Image (cartoon, rainbow, N blue to C red; front, side, top):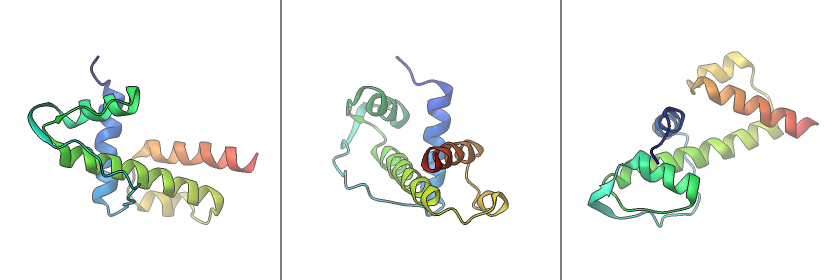
Length: 113
């Protein structure tokens, strides 16, 4: 089973989030070592996220960046939802992908119900 376009987009967005400097080390550093015969980083991300399988990848650095970006984004959303002080314009100025705003709104609704 191949990753969908949505999974590929989120994978790329998590790398962008990481590259923006929004980083959080979730403590998991047991990422696969580089294997020239392994699968791509996005396929490894999909397998890990969907099935919990950690498969050899030929791009472990990209996988690491995506997982760190995801962990950082999830932590940031949780922190923002607990103490919301940003306007939408300020949030937009952080240059996060558009789906991030919807994720944050969902978390805010959960937090304040």
